Image 1 (cartoon, rainbow, N blue to C red):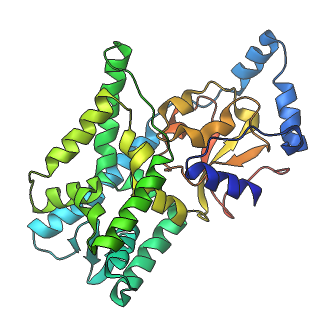
Image 2 (tube, rainbow, N blue to C red):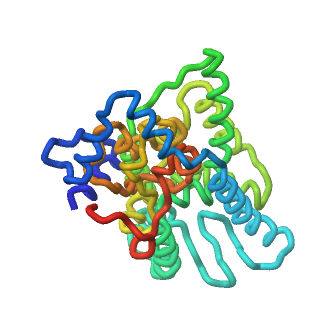
Image 3 (cartoon, rainbow, N blue to C red):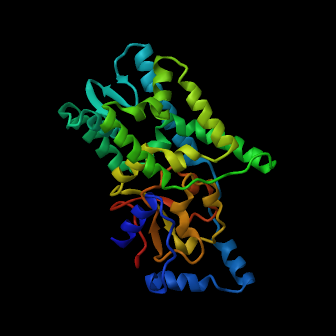
Length: 325
């Protein structure tokens, strides 16, 4: 329970807490002590352990899934096959209504009552992402995430040439924005957030054709390239916060094996939300196996990047885990 509260606290913008001496399990303490070997001995142990090599397996799977899901909406509309009607904000799949959880909340706040017709569709989507891990929506389905990922490569290239510099924002900003848009929906009777939602804008633009509102998307991407790396997804998006809460009890997780880690920090360099990987910092893991928190997007970049295989996907109750956790 303590770990869940800590994960939730971080999701709301708090900085990761350093563990106290009494927080460590006996197994974790023993592993940390082992890693205090002489540098020569430590390097020799590292060479034996590093069997995993960085690859792009999970990124290829994720990009393929994201593109296919969005193409289903586009082709269903243009070919008039009525397989998936609508957009990512709200749709019908084989005649069954579905609606994005955040969009449903906005609608109910705007109308100031529970909309019965939305409940089944909303519950279905919440169940799906509750099982898969809420923020998996961000990296596996959201079209803006893919554009931002490509824009990030440009930002890193310019940063390497010292043309731009990253300016991190406070992660609590998205909590403020979530509350602000909730108040605006309730006060105006209008779903204000949906008019600026990059997810909804891009989904509708791909399906029904582009419009002037795409200038907002270009402005966001320019801000991320020139000023703050992955600013929208990392610091601002209310949808990310909503789905983080939805996926709190998800059985699908990225797990960290302390015994395999040599703290290269490569995973944190590629992570969309690097605060969730605070546990990989040397001396931070309090148990031998640590499940990465609710704010993790399950994008798999850290799994692809980790040179020693310390990070991997697990399914609670299915994947065999180490004892002594």
